[in-house]
Image (tube, rainbow over the protein chains, first blue to last red):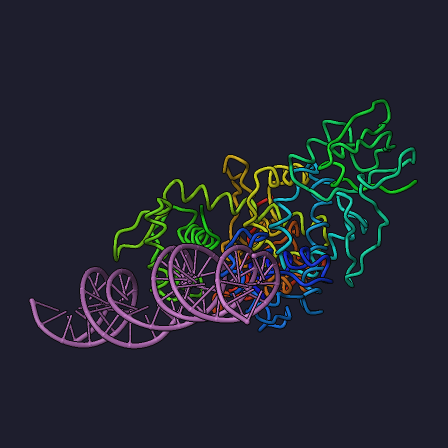
Length: 218
Length: 218
DNA sequence: AATAATTTTTAGACTTATCTAAATTTGTTT
DNA sequence: AAACAAATTTAGATAAGTCTAAAAATTATT
């Protein structure tokens, strides 16, 4: 049986490893889990013993195929619940994350399959992130970050990297949501801020905003 | 912070104490929780320290008002999720219990209030049990057990006491569901079995069935 | 009312996930 | 390549919830 804590570590490793592709440091895991490196080491050993991860002392970890399957399944559940919360229960996109963190650990294949069908098999969550299907396959999305967008080209907002309440509320209050049309007017080299054209207004966003907003050419 | 285990003990005590009214033995709690009496004692002490229960050594426990509030809130969540699973996700009434056991522990007032509204404020769960409202008030239901029903009177099935898969599937296969009309034809004193009239058929049910099926006069 | 049986509690131990502090390995400088 | 710094691991401790075995209290029986 897999524990809740093991699931959370696996999920953290998956995200830190760039979807299971790169090696991850002990310290990075400890920070992501808000714990100490010694605790992370203990858990890494355990995940390795249970074949969720490959690990050599002092060399960092990677997830095994088994570990990746666990991670993708949790992500699927998390994102489906987020869609449910926003579409059926009137949550806003900045409110869903915390509750979904708990719902994602409920174990029932029937529950998640039926939820998927009830929501009509959504492909993306409220933050624009793709929802893996039952077999763990993601629908690829060719998104770029606002900071790298070209001047004068029309883009559509398709996602965010930072799902913190503060960031999402900032976007809301500036009239940016998934689907919003954005054109870059000017990039300021001095502080890497970006002036963008929205429907009726022009606004300037800082570098940290520009690095966390995903766009797609239209 | 209340732990998952504490919540489950409180719920067990609530049920064993006949909705918080009677004193409960250590052994009964241990059995309900599938654990040993020594473990139950430890937890009872802890619940008492945290003011969820009143406890005197060797004298059993009762829930405090605080403890009852916790219990009723969990029951509310459990039953609302059961309605959701049956009405929206195509679960049958014998499949819901296990999943609801997990969902009931998700902590979010907004989640449960919105779920309640989404389901249009249901008053009873799929087994006929009343759902407490936000303030913890139950809608009283004047149900009697089949074993005590009178011969010749028309009743409607309004609930079950035993929610095990075996019992619910037995009812299904004999054409009994919530709302089914039932009239008692004969009570057999020898084994306390009961012959009942359904819509088109007559069947004989054993004492254990008759003691677990709730009816209401119509 | 004394003894037996049952119930309940205590004492000490185990597991999981965590911590601090110390030891070890790796890497980076000079 | 020696020495320092940073990252990682080990060792030993703690808290929650559980267990077994033994002790204590309550209840039942003769």
